[in-house]
Image 1 (tube, rainbow, N blue to C red):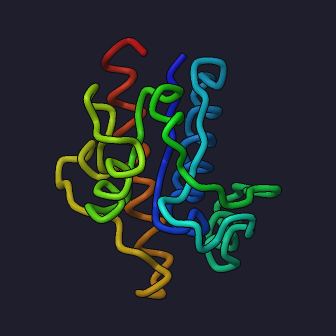
Image 2 (image 1 turned 90 degrees about the horizontal axis):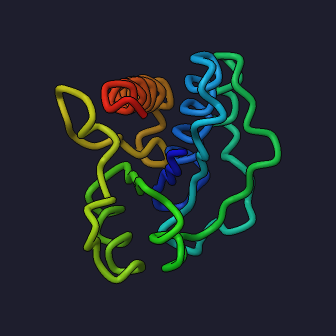
Amino acid sequence: MKHILFLCHGNICRSPMAEFVMKHLVEESGLSASFHIASAATSTEEIGNGVYPPARRKLAEHGISCAGKTARQLMRRDYGEYDYLIGMDRYNLRNMERICGGDPQGKMHLLLDFTERGGEVADPWYTGDFEATWRDVLEGCTALLQHFLKQGL
């Protein structure tokens, strides 16, 4: 079983979008039993808050529910519990390494590193462009699932 933790700054936009898109893709592929997927924040600002309404609406447009999700912060112990810790931008990666005390096992990645183009998922909290974030997250999660399939899970 693969344990995946998606991360962004507040865990109310990008990382929960990635969590629920990935769960949706895995379920559609009939592979739910092979994955444990969650998300967390690198900050404490939004702890306990639900998914930001525009992010929730964007997921709902595609038939994906994120009901019950509340923000939580990355903990040092998460490094041992997850196989992949996937940030949305380089700022997230720096904070992930700080919180976890480094990345000695090479578990930390950017979501779009699994795509051919690479780069960062823009933060819709600042851009207001939840459609662009949706496209990036969908592309990244699709590529991540393909990565696992090529590895034979």
